[in-house]
Length: 134
Image (tube, rainbow, N blue to C red):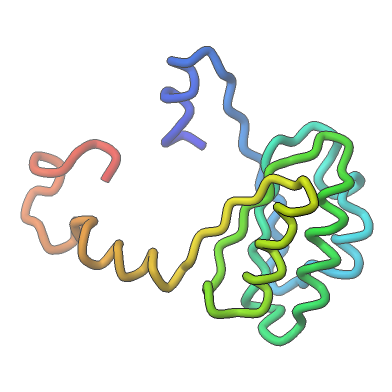
């Protein structure tokens, strides 16, 4: 939140991030069926980040995604997962149902990060040689 707040403010947008992370908890059925109660009624983006707990439970991710699509604010659904999973294919189909989805392949992102983003722990005096965001 602190990293992007000033960028959004320059556009006249107040940025508020709410972390509802519950370690080791799956997306369904409880969180999927009670999204308004858990996440609230004022949200623009909802992030699915349950791959650690739902490695083989594709149906839970889809229940969560389908229910998120019925949320009163129609949030953008964000998913960071491997593009090789069945979940990924199912989440892509939510777009065809009128839901906005952003899918980020964590395998490709890791490759990109290793080659494109400098590792500040390997640079002497990183405060002088790296942009403030890094």
